[in-house]
Image (tube, rainbow, N blue to C red):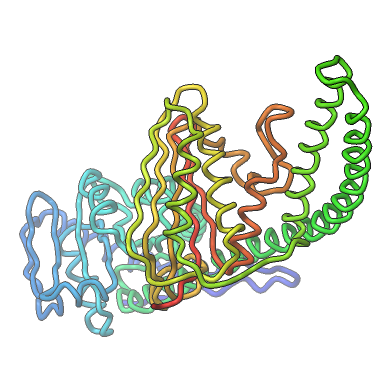
Length: 457
């Protein structure tokens, strides 16, 4: 029986897409079509189970249109390529036979219906789908649409009796990774390996692109912070000089004013406003890092317990406070005043979030370690002391959560906040070579987690 492969047209100036080139290789002559149609009719009349022959993953069972191939050992199965096969038993056996010949380690799950296919996607977590284009109960095209609409980033390969150039291009445009003719099942292992390589390359590109976007955002944030730090430091010093004059002359005038008079009350309000300004200057200077720092080894549990006692006394009774500390790996290195400032600011924010309805404020201190093999989300391997401040308040809206550490950003009313509290926390944690995360859901509450490097005892 003759077979032929059509060559691309060679008209001058014409070019072909990779999808069109791939599709053209799949076109066969009419003699092959008739032979395959005949074989398909025979196969459709047979629904008997076919036992696996020398399968490296040992056991094949067929039940209710659901065939599972399982390995002898769980570890072997985890390392094998998981393939979800949407086809009849005979087609699955033929495909597995070709894959075994190429020494591809795989675990296969074969399904026949839409329900079993959806179940396989969720429970089997396949690395790849091999689908019969013309399976009666649930077509490969419907399966492809299901996979792509559910955003499964897995290769999808069609096994088909015959396909024209136009149909092949259409399948590839709809998201198919490749198409392999049944008469050329020997091509399947290469198609599988190529699809996995393409998938890994695509995922790597996405990972790198995401890292670049994150890096660009961090660089922009650093540049903005540097500009604000310089501006804040200059403003704070100039403003402090102005406040010194206001406070000094107010005190002088107060000495010559009758006690209890209306003028004394006015001067008292001037002094109160000046003192609020001085507190703002202190925060600006801390933000611009122009205040002296006394870094030394200290136990975070001691600071947390002492600070929590003071803050609990000023917290509304509608808020239940729970403080839990466990043994620490060892001391951290930092400025006690700055470390205390972290808890004060996070505590104050939590109380503000629960000011109307009350709630529960949890403060937890525990050990945390990051190993080199662990997915650490960018954290350096090592030992950390983990401080968690959790509230059941109003939460943070998703569209502003990425801005909460920006200097002067606040959702509080005018006069209720400066917008420097969380930016100070962020700056202190960064100075301490630590990490800060936030999780929040509107109406449920927020959780701030601080990781500070610890020294072993």
